[in-house]
Image: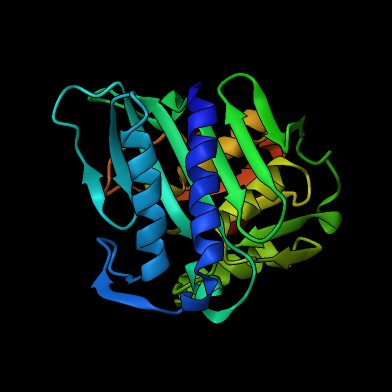
Length: 271
């Protein structure tokens, strides 16, 4: 079984488990994950089944998860798997049918970066959308290659923009500079899906410049880059982050490098 088939199987199994137990979507474990968020029971169960499938695959993995942190392999692992079991758990808890699973894998090394990711899968829970990215081979949606949106004037641009827990004076001013220069904003509260829709052309860009997004969301930015889009970090450099559990992401992901840099320039007030 190939890596991409393995992580697709794991994501699909987690999705099926969650949908079978959707009646307890609001149930919490009473614990908080290492990022300080309360863990839903289904978050933990979805994560557990993904871990089980990976560990029983015959391939040696270390695992980085949102709910449990780093799960080290006793021997030298072949790969690192990065798992976000339910992205959009607040939606799930409230009965809003927008959430997803994200898994990325890369060869294990002491100095891994996001450029090393070989494969990613993002599976929507409630819609028939399975996005798969393979390094240097593009991105597929349900087996069909996708492309980012074609360039268009700023007044036609639709962006996703994450604002959760970040409305201080400086951030508010930066946000207004971006949003008043585009056609409209969408936000699903599942950043992985917003990044997939950016990769596939439904959105022109997705911005999360809060500096707080955990690295476990890296499957989303991987989708954009492999589809042919472009992702810059908050300094303007092409996004390439060290794979460390404490690492946070801050980026503008867009259909083109020009658009990514334009949006970041607006946000920084240098445009």
